Length: 192
Image 1 (cartoon, one colour):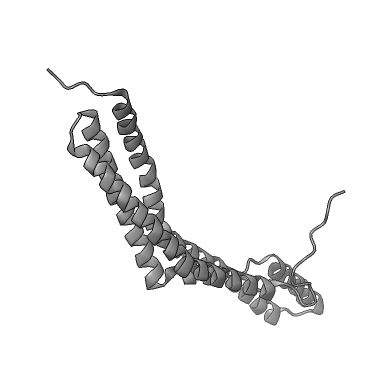
Image 2: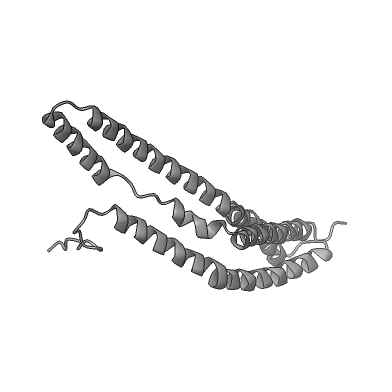
């Protein structure tokens, strides 16, 4: 005769299965963060290079211009292009691409996937009323606590300084992109 499964055990088992599946998305995000930053840096560099090429092409056209009116027209186009050009934000991604940051994200992503695998195994085991499933769940909980403490330390000592450097790089690029005489931080209009 099959062993009867208490309702509480069923709830815990289903909870473990759901937690394992949902937290796997977090693990994949953590592991993929450096890849996203690489993509962001490449896209920013490509946009900046394209804008530089457009300005260089207009400069060459200006040199070939024969009349002052043509030069004025091209100067206006260059000024407009510089005004609407996006800053080069590729430096924003640099702090997140250091070896310590990349390996940290990868290590925590892998650790989270392993913990989620234990949770999933314990959930399946609890559904089949296996005694070892409780041990899997307890080990997964203990590892999750250790992982959370490690992730907190990683965020404080590695990610926060990287974010501060990224913010400084972004502000520097935005300041460089502003026209001369413009305030460093434009005043936002306040609606009545």
